[in-house]
Image: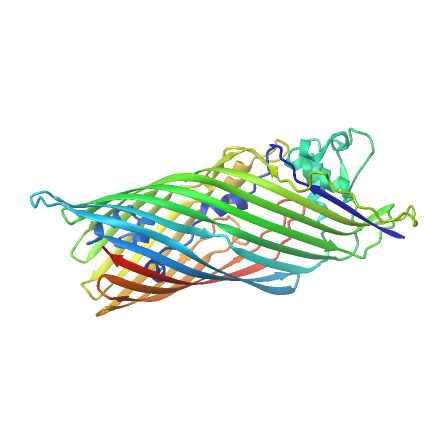
Length: 512
């Protein structure tokens, strides 16, 4: 009995439609609570308050609440802990990242005409890292039922279950993988890597079966490492009418840079005594997504009484223009029962160092509505509550999947739902010292909360006013459970992951 090693890399610069996934849409539609330390310490509950650079992300009317010009810089350290459980095997992976996550300034222009009811105008510019993608998860365990071969078999058979043909064997045999679309490429890899077999050897065959031995356990490992960010540059303008009503507008420019490397490994000691049995497989996927987008926001803050503030804000969809580059690598360990004397061989693509560059596509994330209320206790402190709603089922891609697959926008509409978010924050002042705390609850955007659970977060912080300079420190913690399949179809088993984040932020504020 002789072991063969099959080695193939797919990664070439040709345009074809990538199979988009719901999880990709959610990644770019979600924002995190980042920004200044004061904003984070109060869990972002600033929609009716204003007076903070990061509050402009909630309600653009907040800049005209400022009394003076200000400039703020914020540094943060994000520590992420991912505790995985895969068929009873547990592991905890930790990662830490330090960055400058916020920088901005606001300029206030007071109206010298005392007869005018327009008291102040303000303009601001603010940059924030709205989502930090630096993360790492590791999961491993013994799967008693399913093999990764199901992923390749699913693509090869396409929608045969819906009375549609699978991928013809002749298409695989007569093509190089860079000539195929994404779905056909997966079938090509599975066939060339000996993971799947055609039911018949004629070119019209469109039915495939797994070549991985069944009837036993499969040891599996899945490692996912990601880096990158969603950034937002905001240009703001607002006005104060009669010291009672504030109006504001934001024009937002978005930037995305995301890299994800996924390495899946599987082995088994099952023996079906086929002509060729696959004993182990390593499948690596590397995704690089980059692009830009635009959105706008409108908002108002009303001083209902001397102490009571009410805020209303609307955030438009974000219209992204994105590009994907993908590299795939498949390695198979094979036992061949036909010729015990044949030596092991290695075969690799001549273009193995290139990425597949896909056609540029557009993504529209959902709009968001926020209602806020705050009560200010004179100069002693305040209590604030924000409620936001975002319907993730309205997320849309401009390019649908390959016609052999269901349309991705239909899948998004059926899989995702509206998500409600509550943020509560408070501040208490003792002379120059400020004490702050907050709570945040955000519903899952999935109809099935198992895929991505609800998020709960707590925060606290302190600040000290030195006069024209202020120093703020905040700590925030969030927790969320997820259970997403390692792959989107065919083999959808995945680990249960409990994700905890601990963020420490430090802001330095200057009044100009």
